[in-house]
Structure formats: structure tokens, C-alpha cells
Amino acid sequence: LAAAEQVTVDADVVQAIARTADGSVRDAESMFGQLLAFGGKHIASADAAFVLPRSSVERARSLADAIARRDLPAAIDEVHAAEEGGFDADAYLRDVITVLRDAILNRFSPSRREGERPVPARASGEGAGTSEIFAREVAALRACSELLDRIGRSDRPFFNLEVAVLGLMANELQAASP
Image 1 (cartoon, rainbow, N blue to C red):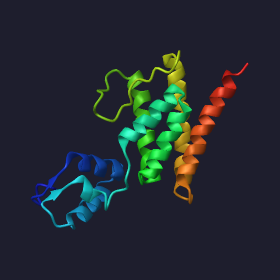
Image 2 (image 1 turned 120 degrees about the vertical axis):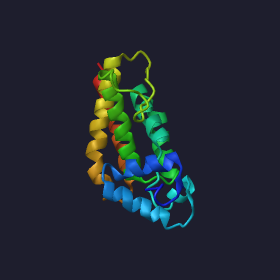
Image 3 (image 1 turned 180 degrees about the vertical axis):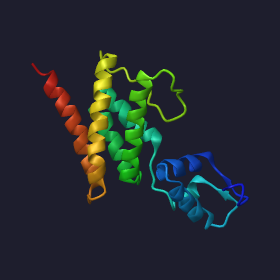
Image 4 (image 1 turned 30 degrees about the horizontal axis):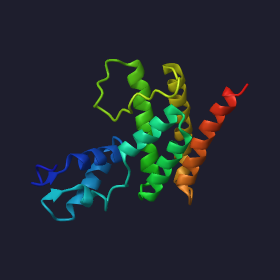
């Protein structure tokens, strides 16, 4: 589409459109059309910020890593940073889900090439084994997936994410207690 319109598009904008469209070609074309309406011959991240919901795969990866390490202060800081950064809660949560899902799939599917999708760094929490990290990632994925349908109906969506992170950590602490 960009070539047909004789427009150049930053790679991160193309990735953001694809991620936001979530497999819907019609949605992707609509978003691209909205970006074309700006009238320039180059579409940069700053232009996309007016149309696309704001999120960050890097920040989502940081949250997933903090959860895998059982680092509650870092996890809560990541949620606050996303909220203060003006991120769209739904888009951010979808990025967190993608990062967690890919971490789990990459752990069990060596044929998947890292780099095809955002993959979190292999977290190595204090004394945590791979199975413990996997269990945390699965629990976080489950909690985030359950939260996804409620987050759009909330007047404080990041509060819901904070509660989910706190709940994950509380469950682990309770399970670890004698």
C-alpha cells in the first residue's frame, strides 16, 4: 500500500499497525488510510501516535521479565511507567500477553526463531529454575488474558493491571509460605 501511494513508512509504524490490527487486513488498511490523511510522503512514529493506540513492546517485555524474576517493585514500576507514559491500557496489556505467550512458546519450540516476535530476555530469578519461571509466565498470561475483557470498561484500567500483578505475587508468596 505504501509503495502504491508513493509513501515511505518507518518500520516501527508498520509493526505497530500490524500489532494493533491483530490480523485484520481491513483494520490495518483503515489505520494506514488515517495515517495517509496527514498528507506527507513519510509516515513516522510521531504521526502514528495520533492514530494508533500508544504502547511499547519494550515496556511490556520489562513487565514480563519483572514478573518472571518475582520483582514486585519493578513490576509495579513498569505498570506506573506505562500509565504515566500515556500508553493505551488495552494495547499495553495485549503487548504483555504477546510477550508472555512468545516466551512460553519459544521455551518449548526450538524451531521458532527469536526475532520473529518480541521475546523477553530469559529471566533468571533468584534461585528460580526454568519450571518456576514457566509457571510464573503461565500464571501471568492467564491473569492478563482474564483482565483483557474488563480493562476497556474501567475508568482506571491501569489500576486493574496493578491488582493483577499484586495478585500474582501474593499467590506466589502464599504458596511459598510454610
